[in-house]
Length: 352
Image (cartoon, rainbow, N blue to C red; front, side, top):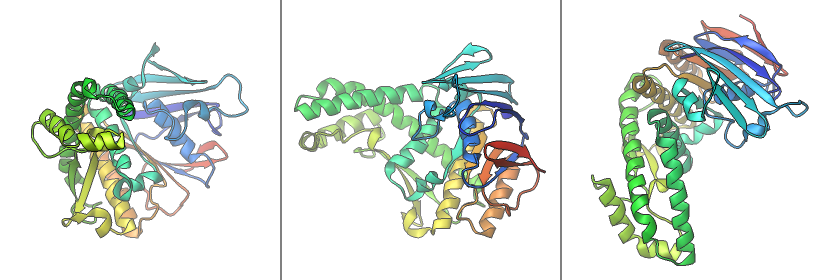
């Protein structure tokens, strides 16, 4: 898919405008605070992900505006659709004039984002890698976001019962079924990542192994059996801590390099290249699964990469044949083809 054009109205600091994008590479240049990230966030909204993490949609409304913010996007490619988002206290979404949900937009125009915080994908907490898996699974499996929400509700109920010192038996069967389903989804996308990483091996500084460490679980092939057995083994510890210790909420994606944890082997620049390779592999997996080209959103795309790393990344983006939006304050990237855009105090201008 491609985002052919976007109309901005009262969104963050962006000037009200209609912008027709290049179907390939779009480089957003500008000083820090100019509005480059706000452009990416607007595209993040119209592709079904909402405001960036840490913000609510209501936070994106320009502070001195009346009547809220609105975004409209025309997407083309495997199909042609019109997307609208009206943002006040919450977001109201429409797809081809009909009310819709976030998941409908994600299925229609799949997108993946790489922000500076995603550098922590390699060396950060397990929650960062779980979020990466969850985003990929949400694009892979239409029911995933709903099932994950249901799992979190029953997990919180189990936590409440543990805190009160009550029996948790009433939650175990439901939690076991949801856990097994979520684990199966995560295992499938990790297998796909392994396959598609090969396509982007030029980005990888070294060979990377990927494995799912099931939260509190073992390695049994029967996922339901593994959940129940692990609950029995950890029952005393759960009662003592008052916390559920088994389930996908404690999973981790293990990245290994030469038999050791990747953060111990890779330099900071190599970690960034590895994280970018994972995003590219995820995009390839989504394209294969959904039969629709993804849209990629990158913020500070070349940060912490040396000259060789930048050259390899730009070449990978060019040969992907996907639409890419890349924001950077740098003006010396080895960028060719596509369009360059200058973002200054919220105004977006093409300057090829």
